[in-house]
Length: 359
Image (cartoon, rainbow, N blue to C red; front, side, top):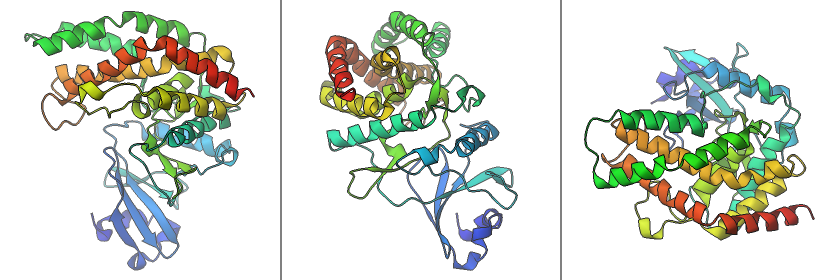
């Protein structure tokens, strides 16, 4: 997309007055929003076209981000929290031809797809926990669900069971094996339901992948936390669990290298140390202990989502070949098995990290 087509959007912002002096180029490799870097005489900015197929309630997102601004969450963080800049009408969203756009400040730094050291895992976990801690005084019950029931494992399981029971075709042996595995996760579902009844909701990011952080050039600190569309009220185990699922696994969620796919215990330990350090005194023992369930909850939930989409004909997740969602579900099942087999070990690492964080 060129500058001429985007000029109706840019004209809605005071700092883009001299459009002829602006340069535009695609930014990042995100699969959700359409993102560009704008270089102008006033500095660099990020322009993002809003994907309303995935996020159907942009006004809810705008409301939640406004609460972060009103409660000065960014001022309580040791890194930047780039929030949408307001247009001439004082709004976060700028509509052009039925599509919403937003402008953010540009933060110079590096993004990672994979960690290359345990220190990077520790630093990342600390940053996400610091974000939740910064919202300690925010009344999270006023925040809106930007994606309803996004991390509700019990509801994902119910949907999976309903879809699976309605399949008319005969499943092959690999599908049958995975079906039995996920149906046998009922004890985990019940443990999750029981656990969240005892936990307070917190300000959570809800998409704690490593590429949602901007690191300094030397990768020794976090410069910014980004992609805030999923920010809402949630449980700490969601954010920590997604870190475990995506950072502490030896292979990515699209890998089919089954033999070498497992939990990396040393990275798990680094994540736990960093997360507990970032939380400080925010959480009591029971809430901290719930983090141990997080990896299993988030891995199971994503496995269920991948398998459900496979059974429905790949209607949600983008696939490069017909069986990819099935393989993603298998990938998550292998990680989940490993997490469950290592429960006692992970509990020991949790105890060690808890003692370290209290020193």
